[in-house]
Image 1 (cartoon, one colour):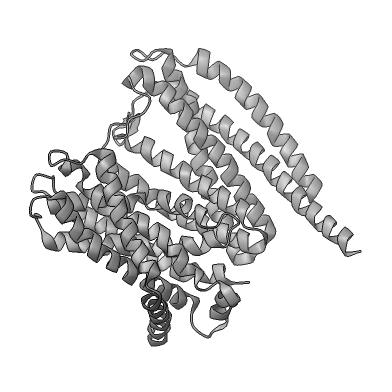
Image 2 (cartoon, one colour; image 1 turned 30 degrees about the horizontal axis):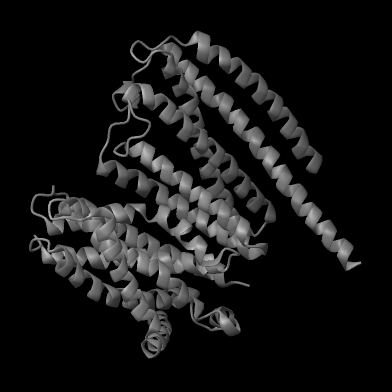
Length: 228
Length: 226
């Protein structure tokens, strides 16, 4: 079991490396330069790809948390905390690339009246709270409480999203109900980047889950040593 | 259902009786709320011209902050002598225990509001509210949702190594939709010039309250379990 997980980790790692390396070509050479924003628009590929994968991470964390509360299998808790950690890293990247793009285009690093900015910031805060909570309570009770918080946090995400949207709005709607406002090359690059980052996400998730597994194993061995 | 209500009432009544005999917590919460109003006045130099923008904050921040400060003490009642464990072992539904704690806290916060909201009108001299019923409904719905989450997260926070320090970190991000709702509704209730959409925001608050009362009631068991 353990060596199988490690083998998966190595395979997905190589896949992610190749995909992300190729992605540099697509993002910087293959995709055409945007007419009005220029090269800074290329940030969008990374920005949107990390955002989608962060949602994937938090969705997985919800599933693993519910499974943990239901089945009480330590493995689910390890996967949940790993997914949240990688998700927070990705959300941090979203929050950095967004303002970098916004400064030349909107002439401001941050606009509070943009709903997606605000809701992403709150999403980030919710999952940072999860990580602090998970780290500051020991034992199975801490894992249970963190899982409950993950469920509440995830339920809150759509409410935050809509309430902030009703508050007011002007995020670029690249993909709207009217269709996609991009050229074919741009769409391909975005899809490819998202896929490459998904591979990266799964590699980091496996890496992190393996670390959690080793930590649990060490604890078990330490207990056995002290029992003798 | 009947035993659920009875058990919640027993817990709430016990908490309120303790607080009315002690009086110190309730008094400190009221004084703290008033002090926040004074601090907000000086730090933002709230004048009649700026009042439309600031009124909702001046009304709600004292309530939110004094709840944040007081609720930890209310939950702490159950900590000595392993009371939580005792409550978990009673035949009562853990959800009913949570409801009781929450209703007890709600009553105390309502008492704080009964002082701090009238004082807001005396101290800042806003025009006569556009709609008193809307203001009352907003106060009820806003306080309900906030106190429910605050009670739940307070128990979580107090079980952690960080203690009460963790409470705002858990509570504030999750309560942002509630804050947006109460701010908009309070502005609409107080001033005639503010734009409408009462229905939308009331629906947001009601959905929020129902959801974040049900989820803690259903999951409180996991917190108490040893």
